[in-house]
Length: 127
Image (cartoon, rainbow, N blue to C red; front, side, top):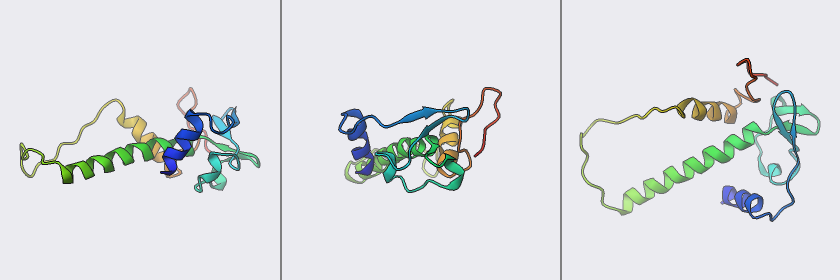
């Protein structure tokens, strides 16, 4: 519900557009401004200065939270809808794609190991 609330406020313009700044490290936002003020995961490492923090951890939270909500919804569907039997009982399928590195980067940002955007030379600028 929190993700939906943030989405509705941003997409439907229920709040004024928040400040998003651009720095040499990446995009920054004001952590005390809506909708970012509801994100309780900011740390000292996320700070660009006293008034701005990296946008990446919040953005990762929103994206991965949406993916997780969809996964949970599918798990509920699977309990209510009779699915066909397994094609190969006991085996699991793991899918990799060109998006795997992006998903891992979002996870790293969410967990605090990738706080800022990657520079053009490939080096990540840390807090």
